[in-house]
Every structure is written in C-alpha cells, then in structure tokens.
Amino acid sequence: MHSSITKNIHALEKDVLEIEGNIKEFSKSHNVKEIRKSHTKLRSDLKDLGMFATNSCLKKDENRQIVDFLKIHYSYLQQFSIDKSFQSNILKREINPNNTSNTRRKNHGMSLGLLEENTESLED
Image (cartoon, rainbow, N blue to C red; front, side, top):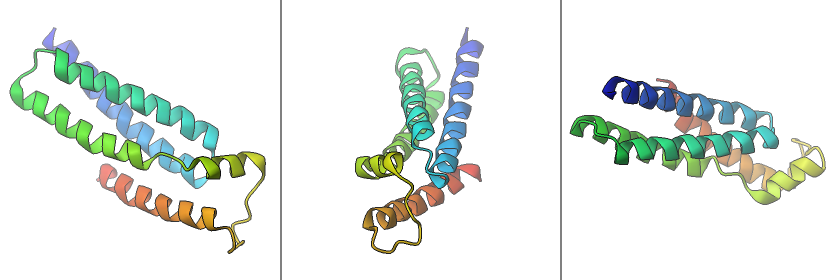
C-alpha cells in the first residue's frame, strides 16, 4: 500500500511540473483557454497532493518533502494567475505587440518574465 501511495505522489508531482511548463508555453502564445484549463488542473493536482500529505501514513521526512513541494508550487500557482482585463483583450481582438501605448500588454510581459524565471528553476 505504501508503494502505491508513493507512486501516486510522484505521478502528481511530475504532473505539476509538466503543467507548469505548459502554462509557460501557453503564456508565450497568449493561449488563454489552455492557460485556464492548465491552471484548473494544476490547482486540482496540488489539492490532491495536499490530501496525500495530510491523510496518508507517510514517514515524517516524506511528508515534509511533500509539504515543501506544495509551498513552492502553490506560490507558482499564484504567479500563474492571469489579469482578467488582459484575458478579455486577447479574446476580443489580437493585440499589436508593437503598440507602446498598451500598458496592460507591457505589465503582462513583465509578469511573464517573472514566470519564466521561476519555471526555469524547476527545469534544473
């Protein structure tokens, strides 16, 4: 039973890392629909992982590793949130990247830079 729980935990952790990478890619292409799907899936996987941490009979060090993983990736989840006004602009029309008067676009680009920095550390 312990090995099946451990396998499930590792599968969820792998999924979380993969979803975070997908969100990064979808952000580059401004694919809001896929970002939303991935964001929902990421939240669900982190919730499931949290249930394993609180409800399973794991060793103390294994439980601590899961809790540390959750802290890091819940923080990333918050950074992956998208500005609602930016979403609606993308859905309504294509935004011209050369338009310097579009401050929402500029601000979103800055948040994507932070996102890329944080997800690069996951790949190491």
